[in-house]
Structures are given as structure tokens and as C-alpha cells.
Length: 312
Length: 274
Image (cartoon, rainbow over all chains, first blue to last red; front, side, top):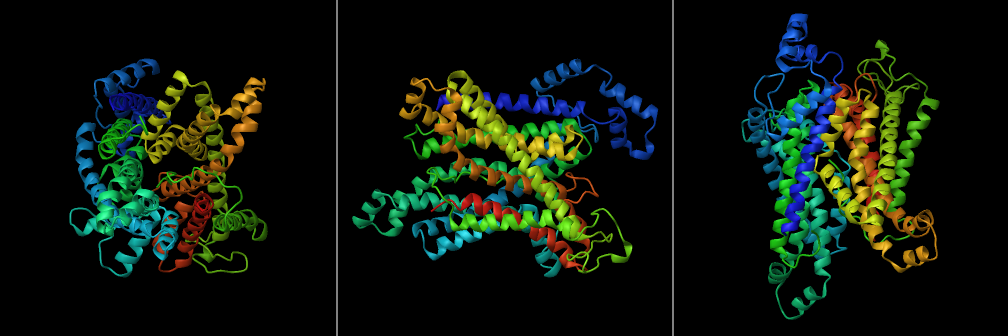
């Protein structure tokens, strides 16, 4: 277990280096004169002149050679100093903290909804592998997988909020605003987690110890609680860690569509405006978040199934 | 968004299932449309004709016209060719990269193996869409950026699969016998490793292509992918969205084309389970 956690720590360092290199390349590849571009982002394209660009150049130290810039870049990263957004001028940490709350709310709602939909259906299908529910689930989940999340969002907006007029299409602040974006994300996640739960459950249900439990007179409910739940738990928890990546990607797209003021929305804007410090901070947060989450998943899987030895 | 490949069956069976044939048929139909449409209905996908704004189907363009009077037949075919081409290029490049690094890591073992695994896990930690977005900000040409970004995302799955399979095979008696008889690495790869890997790689490739097409469309849809006026599936959807009351079919055709392409790929990838 200690070795597994050490590996995660090493992975975290490498993720930080990767993000550093990528965002530095991004900084170097900015087309045209960087000072002019940043000035345009700040003051608007009409208000840019040589003086404004020169002021930006002096303020951000853009006239240094590339190697020196990379040194400063890495040192800042090591001190966990993410700098300030070149467009809004606010500190990146503050900006991200501000947006992360909104994103976490959405991601949490989506995850909870997907756990309500996916695993129960999957378990029921897996208990009767080959039954009508199992075959139906296969068809539905294959179809759902073939609908990209942005398309699902589009379909829901057109159907529910434009044609039926039940829910607002976009916005933030009221509980009603949660339903459509969370449902969009949850349908995609639920389709996959249902398949995972189904495969795990079918495997457990076909095992000799399950048959033995039934033979010695346990009811279906007892059997599932005592012999089923823990065994499919490892598969589901491990999947939850991987799901984070899907959730982040979903959040980037879904927030842009539904106008949700979260980290994904901000990321798209930062890329669009070439706001490199913001991109760097966001990428680092998402990458390290993934590593931390998977370290927690390692621990949880170890706790559920202490036999271990499968990974690490 | 990314098609997770957690359910790749371990035991590869020979021969295709009916589901896979159905998927292949859908895919062939889509590719057929993308390739044949310019021959049957020749039109410039960028040419506007203001007389045909949101026009319905006619003999020249069976799919009608968009809000600038451009032929939707030509645009859909061009968009499909673009997406399929980028997806195919990314899948091919990532397969070569992933398999090569995977075989090297599993064969050599030791610190090379550990370092490769660490690098792959670190790439895995960055969400794929983020990687593609950042690369698209570095590389000026958008299709090339998509190709590089998607390759950097997709190679991990090939690497993990190849490494797991090869490290099992290298220790097997067959490979050891071949090496004792003096056969070189190329022979061992062709004779022992490739036949085991190939069917599994097909699944990864189909999922990877689906992921690639989804990402290209998603980024186009939120206006950070291809630039207008390039015909691209996601861009076409967002362009036609304001007009869907007047011309619902114009919005529906790129939506259906995307769905069918992904469905075909998912059926090929997922149909392997017995």
C-alpha cells in the first residue's frame, strides 16, 4: 500500500512537469506579438496601441529570452505560485477557487444521479444475465454511448426547455438550473457504470460461492448483501476513479453549452483568449485532482477487498 | 466523453459476431457516403447561393441547403471525410507509438518498464479533452493539432494493453523456445506477439476512433475546434441550431451522421462479447 501511494506521489510530480512543459510551449507558440494579444484581451481590440502593448511587455517581462522564461516558469510552479490571469488581472488561485465551487456542485449532482441510475439497473441485469432486462440494457447503453454528451445536452435543451418549456435552457443559481446539465452528464456516466455493474454482478452471480449461498438457504436479499455487494464494490469504486476523467471532459463541454460559470467554461475561455496562467492553473488542478482521487480509490479498494495483490 | 475501454474481453475469439458485422455495415455506408457524395452531387461545400437559403432537398443537393445557401450534401460529406481522416490518422499513429513503447517496456522490463508506465499514467491523469485543447493552442494548423493531441491521448490505451499482454507472453514457453533457437525480435513479434495482440487492438482502435470523432465534434460545437467556414460536424450543428424551427432536417442530418458513425464504431468495438 505504501508503495502504491509512493507511486502516486511520483505520478503527481510528473503530471506537474507535463503541464509545465505543455503550457510553456503554448506560451511560446502564441501567434504574433504576445504583448499585443494580451493587451487586446484586456482593453479590447479597438483600444490597443503601441504604448499599451509596451506597458504589458514591461509588466509581464515578455522581452526575456525563452530559456530564462522557462526557468522563471518552473521556479514559479515549484513555489506553487500560479501567477495572475493575464486578462482579468485577478490571481489564478482566486479565480479557480471561485469557479471550482460551481463545477463541483454540478459534478456532484451528476455523479449522484448517475449512481442512482446506473449501478441498480446493472445489478438487476447482471443477476439475470441473458434476460430481457440484460439485453435491453445492452441496447440502451450502446445507443447512449453513441450520443456524445454535447449532443445529449442539445437534444435535452430542444426537447425539454424549448418545446415543452418545463426547465430553463441555461443559467445558474436556482435548483431548476441543475436538472438539465446534471441529467446530461448522468445519462452518459450511468450508461457506462450500468455496464460495469452488470459485468461484475454477472461474474459474481455465476460463481460457485453464490450458488452455495443460495443452496444453503439464504434469501436473495441476504445473498446480495453478504456475498454480492462487496465483490462488485471493487469494480465500481475503481471505475469511479476513471470516471473522474470522463466527468471533467463532460464538464468542460456541458458548462459551455448550459452557460454554467464553472471551471470548464473558464478553461474554454482561457484557451480562447490564450490566458496561459489560467490554463496552467486549471490543467494542474485537474491533473492533480485525478491523481489524488485515484490514490483515494486505491485506498478504498484496499479497504473493500484487503486481499490485495491485484495491483500496486 | 472518452469511450472507456474497461470492458475489453481478455479472451479474443476468432471471427466476427453479427453485432460487429452490423457495425461494420453502418460504417461502410457512412464512408461510402463521404467518398461518393462529391462524385454524385458535385458542389463546393463553401459556395454560398443566397437564393437557396435554408432550401429543401433538390436534385443537386438531396440534403438541402444551410443558412447561407451552401449545399448540405457537400458539407456533410466534407465534414465526415475530415473527421474520419483525423480519427484514422490519430488511431494509426497512437497504435504504432503505444504498441512500440508497450513491447519495449514489457520486453526489457526493469527501469524502462517502470518509467514507461509512470509516463503513461501521468498522461492518463490529464483529461483527453484538455490535452487536445492545449495542443490546439500550441500547433497553429487545427487538423494537425487534433491529430497530435488525439495521438497523445489515445496511445495510452494501446500501451497498457500491449504491455500487459506482452509481459505475459514473453515469459511463456513458446517465446522462450523461439529465442533459444536464435530467432530475432522481429520474428518473435510477428510469430508470437502480433497474433495475440491484433484482435484486442481492433477493439481499442474502434473505441479510439469513436473518442476522436466525439472530441472533434464537441470542440467544434463549443467553438474551440475547427474554424468556420470549414465544414465540420459539431460546427454544422451549432450553425444550424438557430434555424431548427425553419429547417429541422438541416440540424438533424449532422446529428444523425455523428450518431451513426459512433454507433458503427461502438458496435464493432463492443460486439466481441459472446
